[in-house]
Amino acid sequence: MENKKRKSVSELRVSLSRGSAAGSLINGLYDAGTFAQLGAFVKRNTVAADDGDKASDFEGVITGYGAVDGRLVFAYVQDSSRMKGAFGEAQAKKICAIYDMAMKAGAPIIGVFDSFGAKLEEGVMAMAAYAKVMNKASEASGYIPQIAVINGVCAGSAAAIAAMNDFVIASDKAEMYVTSPFVTKLAADVSVSANNGTVDLVCSENELAAKVKEIITYLPQSADSEAIVENDDDLNRLTPEVENLLGKGKMRELISAVADNGKVCEIGKDYAPEMISAFVSVGGYSCGVVANDPEVKNGAITPVAADKAAGFINLCTSFGLPVVTLVDSVGTEANAENENAAYASAIASLAYSYSQAPAALITAIVGKAYGIAGTVFGSKSVGADVVYATENAEISALAPDAAVSFLYSKEIAAAEKPDEARKEKLEAWKEENASAVNAARLGEIDDIVVAAELRQRICAAVEMMNAD
Image 1 (cartoon, rainbow, N blue to C red):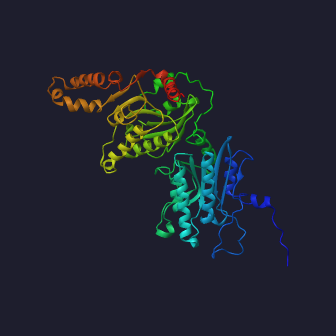
Image 2: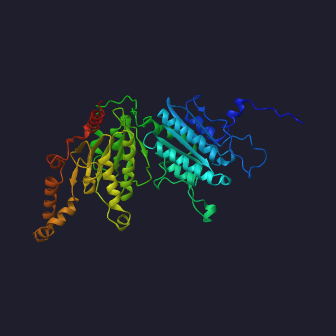
Image 3: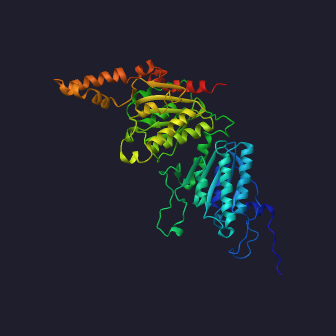
């Protein structure tokens, strides 16, 4: 009988990731030589459907920890090169164990999803395995950052687990679905999309590690720690370029002007594009930014835009990140589709997010703030700590044109020169009822700032609100 050479311990350990997509992602994400596996020799449960002698196979998920740009980060990485990453009781045990360690250490956790689904022959135990991981994700929510990376197939209950994470990043070749097309027997597009509110970023497989690192830069280790972004920008730097951006719909350029070194990490760009959500650092403090995009639907706060902003505000403030709100919006968007989408509930959720936020809230009205935009979107009365307005700001319960038509239509129609009468009424309304000065006199604006000092004033407010 031929003697089989026993593999060395190092060969067994390295074989878990050598040559696989999982191993490549780990190597791209972690600082060289820092990733340490845990549970490296846990064997998968063998079932009748296995071919040949696979009793020595190890579970198809790699778990461990290491340094990402010098910061402690935990991870579980499904390895589809092993039984297609089939998920079962043993895999859940490894993932739950790494969650426990991450929460005890107070450090972020990354989950990489690349599995065709459950080990069907484990039956109810496979179902329970998914539920156990969901429970751990729920326990960790709001305490340690959770980032899901979809690098292959993310199917069934795994899709729900990924969606429970704070961020979902997917490769452009990934697939994500709850009910398999095989089961439904329908031709379905299961490719990942960034416009449905579940996936925040879609990029090439080679960019996944870099995107994860970029997001981690702006996050604290846990809710018990502070997020500081080291940079050499001057917090007193003036922003004369903002003058030419106000009223032009160039909100992303404005955000970049305010941010340290102009760096902006936008989240969920393709979902509800009328609302911008992004991470920046301001005076060295990591902050979330929510802002209207006037170039899309005039920056209207649609139901999906309200949901997007509320979710991002909740995420930021759960980790103690200040939120900077930049307002330039016509308010709501009137159409049947929106009214049938629980519009009032979405606005209520946004108001609740502001009013219950435990972290600092700083608002700057840099354009229009009509109706709901002036009432709910970062107003002082709904919970903002500091509210500024630029000199061009228009703050009105109703768009000035609409307000004049509503209040003075008969008077204008009876005038000798209706067009001139309308123009006069409109100018008077803007000055007396919709100006930043009027809002400041009524105590709803803390100060009116010139464009060149916008970054300086926001930096000062963030630093003040974060003072010990």
